[in-house]
Image (cartoon, rainbow, N blue to C red; front, top):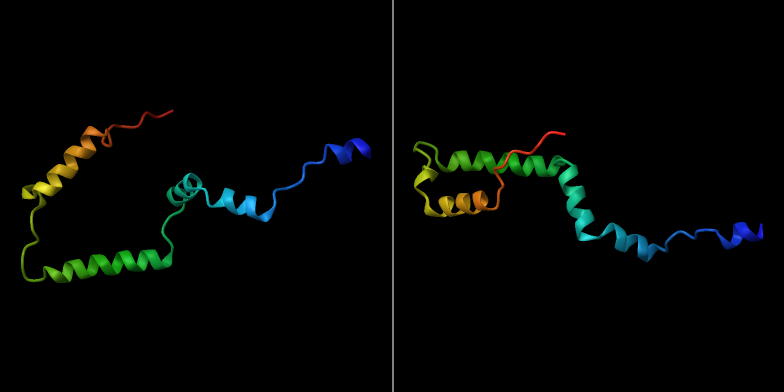
Length: 88
């Protein structure tokens, strides 16, 4: 009993558990793992629908001529975001 009591691992207190759960890296990994919930899906759908209604009766702008879109594309290309991921 004495050895078991001395070697007993006491669980973290509530504050340590909260800090571990609110770690920014842990939160980012969880956000990537889980999909969108109902409210996020609704917001995304409504945003897409309102974007369609904004351009009703006219053509949508072509982003190929947008210099900001080109800058964003070149930046992503330089960062290697378009590289194929190797399969294990």
